[in-house]
Image (tube, rainbow, N blue to C red; front, side, top):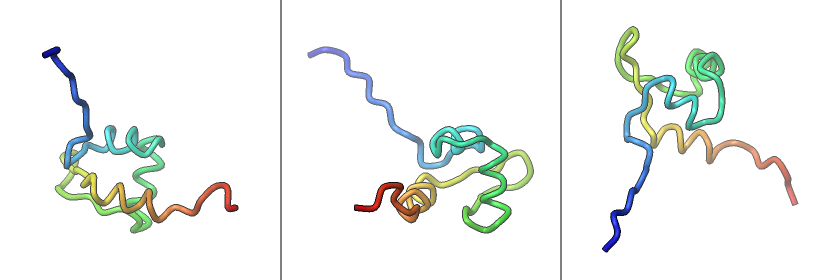
Length: 67
């Protein structure tokens, strides 16, 4: 059996990783957090975002190409 490398997003993500996961800048992520669209967990520089919350945000986005 070959060695298989499986990559997946962790359940909790740093600001930088969450921004990358959402394909946006950290500044845009902070704006969404400050506007109440995303919930951050932790305090100060140790805040994290739940992958499940990020996935819910993605699912709630309007479709770009309505048919």
